[in-house]
Length: 326
Ligand SMILES: Nc1nc2c(ncn2[C@@H]2O[C@H](COP(=O)(O)OP(=O)(O)OP(=O)(O)O)[C@@H](O)[C@H]2O)c(=O)[nH]1
Ligand SMILES: [Mg+2]
Image (cartoon, rainbow, N blue to C red; front, side, top):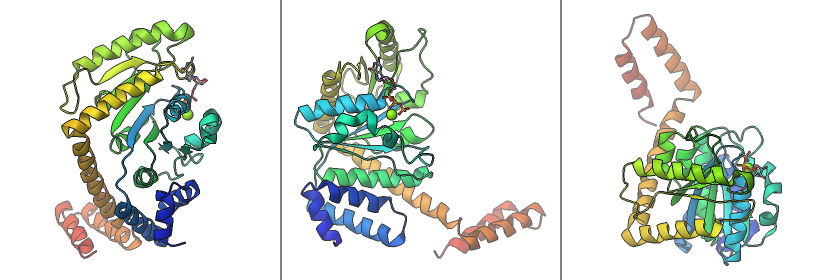
């Protein structure tokens, strides 16, 4: 099948074609890469469909998988189609967190209107980021209404996910004491919506306290132009008891609608496109340093600098000049 046929089948909603296309974008083989780029270009010419892209981050055990299953089923119940992707920085280990947990998304993974794809097993976050970004584009072309992009909250992966999402949701568990959990300020600042999960049974009271603490902390953050009154917001949910999920969706939709009406939605996507362009250039430049010839030259120049034969400045310039033509 050629690229154009594959593109047509994706647009027609053929899930096997979509799965195949994602395998293609995940491949690092040069010929596959060329086909993947051609496929995405073909799809861009055929359709301008947009999904609501929701980034979802949370530490291990907070209930991401349980939430995605319940939330996904709720969306399907509203007649929406849902795709689930993951950015897992530790996926070199097992081939992705979602994979092991498809059992926790048992209902969702059986649904015709849902598509679940584990993180590509690639340890390099930059590579995972590009592949996930392209997978998001494929899911949009396939006509999914909502694309959920999950990540475990470690390291840089939140930034990667936030930079490919229309809204970024932070999932938290009820805190034991009354102190805020160790959520880094930078991550709080990325959040559009904080969901305090497990607001049920014995944990309900502490979930409500945690929610109030975060609502207070969010009010202290600098107001962002892309937020309507009342956002970012913190609310309680129970993924297990399927409580608060419609409210969470209503909040997300209200935010997306407002941002669409005010131009912030398109502006964010435009800013993200700039960001990824910048990242691609930087990564390609760094990759040039990883070739055998470049490494040998770096080593030789490093020796010269260490011996005092050259200054770091002059050696760096020589190195950069040697890459210049590429
Ligand atoms: N009480 C309660 N327990 C929940 C809720 N949501 C999830 N859990 C439980 O929390 C545990 C972890 O849930 P998961 O959905 O696997 O959490 P996760 O964030 O996907 O975890 P990792 O995949 O390891 O990062 C499981 O035992 C769930 O049953 C909830 O709303 N209420
Ligand atoms: Mg999980």
